[in-house]
Amino acid sequence: MNPDDLILISVDDHIAEPANMFEAHVPKKYKEHAPKVVTDENGREQWYYGKLPGRNLGLNAVAGKPREHYNIDASRYDEMRPGCYDVHERVRDMNAGGQLAGLNFPNWTGFSGQVLNEGPDPDLNDIMIKAYNDWHIDEWVGAYPDRFIPCGILPLFDIDRAVAEVKRLADKGCHAVTFSENPAMLGMPSIHSGAWDPLFAACSDLNTVLCCHLGSSSRSMGASADAPPSVPMTLSSALTISTLVELVWAEFWDLFPDLKFSLTEGDIGWIPYFMWRSEHVQDRHSGWTKHEFGIDGSPTGVFRNHILCCFINDRIGIKLLDEFNVDNLCWESDYPHSDGTWPQSPEYVAKLMAELPEDIVAKITHQNAMRHYQFNPFAHRPPEKCTAAALRAESPDVDVVTHVGRPADERDAEFWRRIQTGGWKRE
Image (cartoon, rainbow, N blue to C red):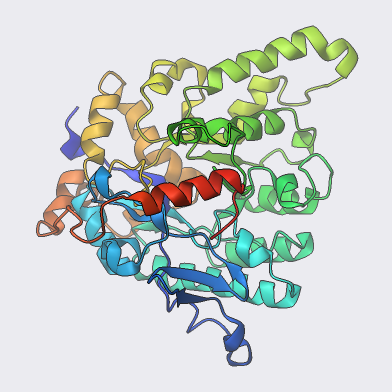
């Protein structure tokens, strides 16, 4: 497989949102309440929504840096490459990395928009969430409609408002929205409560995917408070396991036959075991659990019909590919996060999928993303201009090494210790 010939669409990238993002999208009477970036006494730049601090930048903006410069503590915009926050530089970075397009998740708001959902004034929260979405779709995606799959955030604190926003976003051409991997952990109703049924119905009717990103419940899998940092980093996919299993055993699928959820940034190599375990539980325990599968027929049927999943460079998942519905499997880059493969993504993919048939590679690398998210870059540029080689030729001058930032030091280690001893408290 020649990496130059690949067409790559990522279903998981991120934006380190620019500090001026709300200026054109918040009505004048509410501008004083708009989220803003504050510089603290230590020179760190931090988003705030009123008194609520946003998620810091840290490992979320390390593209192009050597690993010795990966920082945990909050950082500054001038300590990252401009492609993290500037859409024009992002496209140049995508070109240099041979990537055609990407679905971009939020960063400072939390991956399911938690911060904007936690404000004390519901009406104000709704205004700011709409402003975020309008910036994302009209400015970020709108600048290069052939390069970005739009993804909105929802007012999850009010299900009726969430339904209205899903419909508004669909009218703007957006068919992906963030949803928590476990809303109960955010103090919201669980997916089993029936409370979310109006939202599920709207997404099913509009073919809008509910995207459950790793970390979107503001929790991590429990490990010893004094465990080495590599322990929770290794366990990062654990909550995605819970999300998959809860979805598989949910009882609403017959009500919403076209509903799709995506599992984002959790990799896939572990999925076949838990699907086997689910089948085993149904075989051994359905006599007393009384769980019945309707039109999907089984746990595996639910997974194959309704759950999208993705991976960056998961060789175990590729070895077990027969256990998956390859029509629901996608590739992700994760730019500019620390797990990402930029700028060598085509080379990683070519090596990882070297033994797969060309039609399967095409599905995983771009066709599935185009179909599920109703995205057609070929309406803007011919396929021969979408390959890794063609894109790299458009921006041959991009320096893929990030020369700003600082070496990791005790400041980062101390911040990590505070995270582990205080839960996911934002600093």
